Length: 440
Figure 1 (tube, rainbow, N blue to C red):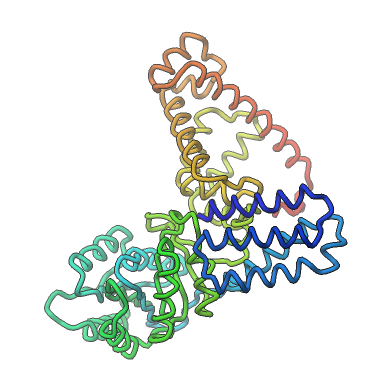
Figure 2: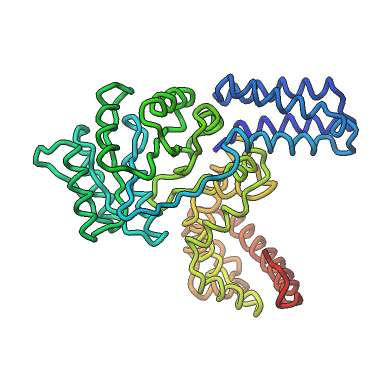
């Protein structure tokens, strides 16, 4: 996400660093380039104007111009202003009622039904008992899709195919929840190809019956300025409480994310970053701003690792590192964990200093992971556990079995040995630290 914008902003800041002492003319030129980069990312032009004006005014201050590191001062200002237009302080998604109601709204094709299932998984992790409500009775197979997703995540769903209207379905689902079957109703409402009065009237009826704590507007981040227009219409008619951005993993421009919170005044609460039901992140403006500027997002990376990696395996891995018994078999296991955490380009974007410059590096990374996995799987169990026995003939056999070359095998084995040495040093340093040393 934001790959193009991140690359362009990085190039602008690199140019500033090249001047050593930054003057007013340098800053004005940089702001002109920032404006162009944001507009090309499909950010709302009013948002762009306000952003550039504020950054420019602050960057031209005496503190920045007289600083020994003016480029760092300007990056700090840009980061703070990005956080501002992304919503400022994050708002936690917390429900208190029982049953609590959550309305999922948006136009057709924005990803409402998929998000409803993802939200149900998120709520269950918080200890709540969600009930999915199929309130889209117009789109063909909408009920079937929600039931299929509900079965996949093992969450109950309330659906009706007997001709009842939407208001009756939601009312009956609420009665069902009050009987103790659930404490949270996630209502997947119908979308239209465009915002119309009939749709808004139906949503008003559902709102009156459900009395929701949250009304979440789901927006397709790849639609750019159209998403902003849709958000304005829904905000005017329904008074939404928050925004959800879907397909953020496929949006290299990011215009919707950088516009919608500033235009509507409503917070972005979630970002869907993949197709799996677990691919949902709470939205933190400061973390997203850091990703855009290539500063990484270590906290989100840690949270994702904690959700996908077995804690017992982490303890076992630490034990092996201390005993220097880490093998290619363990390395393969770590690759599997890495794949569970999501697409490689997303993970790289969370690591400070590892900003991607376009789409190609991500593709290469995924291909390299697949190649390494194929090579290791073509080895015998003995070879994985004792790589030092892999001689010339074994390397040729492994290359044929994995569809790679002997040079690829040599490269992997060399990288593995270097990694073991590095891990050995890290392990010794960690072992020498006092037990109360703050590791986080």
